[in-house]
Length: 219
Image: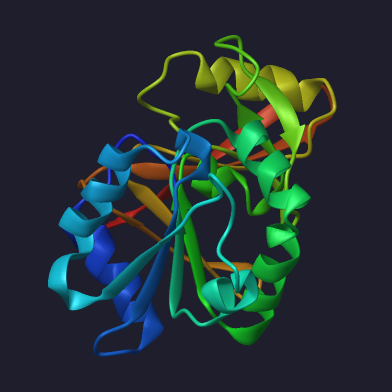
């Protein structure tokens, strides 16, 4: 489930935990994009609380000795926001991208917000290189592109349109607090913290970017 960033409510957390089918799921938080910020990690404990067995994957000063087990022995993996480009570079050095793909193939629930939502797609719209926003290649578990923060950052919508006109693959955008739930690579459902929030499907038709809203189900 890719989340649009900007908001993450208790209802979204409960929805994610429900996808695991476990009474007390094992949850892995990966905060690489935020430089392993301890406050971000503490917020994850606040969100999921005592309902889960929560651990963190950190790479400084070095990754855990049994990195493979740390990734694969989970029911849910949640990736935090921050700098997507820096995060993916670190993951690839330690081959975590390959382990995440294996987790995906095993049926582990994969999720994340903002950078943690972008990373699963083939391409994304990111501020990793500066506030002007740019495109970047991501993991490619899901086809097309993704743009988070669609209603809470004013540059996102016009920039996403411009990038698609310039060759970025069409794809999906999400307002703050909106989760896109995929099953077997297909969009199954759109859920949200707030009534009226939306996701959007965008594609290039001729010279025009066509944007189709998808109403989210408020949790």
